[in-house]
Length: 564
Image: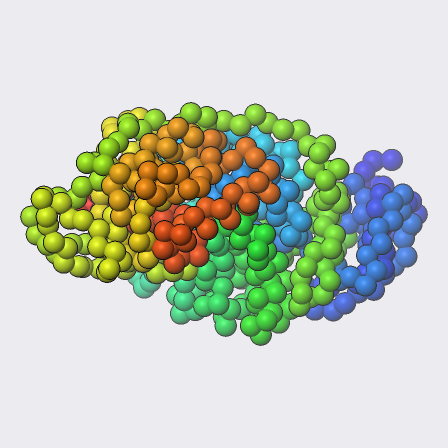
């Protein structure tokens, strides 16, 4: 018999299922009801529920509640610092069965081959990783990236079966003012899903942005901002990453009415945060703890995400849907005890059977070696533009501080928490380097360096000692990119990320442990930030207000121009 006929036969209990989940109860995210009885799975799909079934394999889920697999509606696998395969192992056990990823980190380093690597690798993961094609490579013309991707190149990939649409359109001024390059990309994906990225956009400009066909937004940081975007027809993705933490601000807006149009995402979350707190499971139990109803929280984590991205085959435990099922201890606890993705129970045996694709983007750090003199900051006036960190946000303040000029240089002032930041071009194109000042690290000594530097992923170094800053930059070249902490000419801790300077080839457990050592090393320098490395990465993203820095200089994002 054909698969469809057999699925129907299993649903009617005329044939045995592949797998039967027995002893639990299903939580329906539409009605909020609990449904007793077995859940029958055949061919990776749910055949039936709420009845007695026989199966070739019976999984005992007694005392557990079955909920739909969680959908991370916007994220970058590269920001987890591990390959798609290790991301699969890392977050699958948290109940995530679908992830909608934008590989624009690797695309900004090596271009289309980076996107193709993701399309090939994610075909072999147990969770379903869908790909949005990277719309902004580079994000602006105020930075040097490793590659450029135009509308024609994107159009060649848009019909790939793993592609949903166009990823976050960060160049919102390009949309509003009808930049020809932006228009070409929007026209190429007209009628398909287009992700948004428009922090603090409001009023007529927001109307113009949404009119262009952009349908989702993960950059809302206040309930007021999110409400306006919902009113303009956008689906709001509540984000809780390692740096960008918007869940508490947006939770009051999530209720029985809005949950159909609000989803959950992480954007950028590393294995250490996942180990210590969790992933979407953490978001769900936090929302419920804040007073959000379980139906609204679980719906936002599953069915709403499926509907927002046109994935009609998932999001609810119902006949004919993809068998993405999480058995949790309780709705309030949301601790996954068993996870099934596409009918496969996620365990180490299943992970071991996957086909692995060779990594790409090796030897991608091609920067010139630097010395302490390269970190001097000249100028003829003491008033200085300073990047002000807002912990838990990727938006920054545009501060102004008087910094004394001595011997032609403005030096760090740790007493006022004014430390030096530098961004160095590392793709071997022009050798650019820009320096500036940042406030909010709490750094008292040494230097911290990274090649995870959104979105161009040049080398970013912050420090108070020029010799240590130079050593950090040069060490990053030697290890093919990653993170490094230096003090008094000694490397205190490092994490090599040789895949495009973004991802480790080690298991996520190893990366997690090395992140612990890096965090401790950073704290020994006086750093007060919970996640200094990704916070550093976002200081170089010139599409997020208000003041940022790239290899070309300080960027006034409000004016969308480089400060001369």
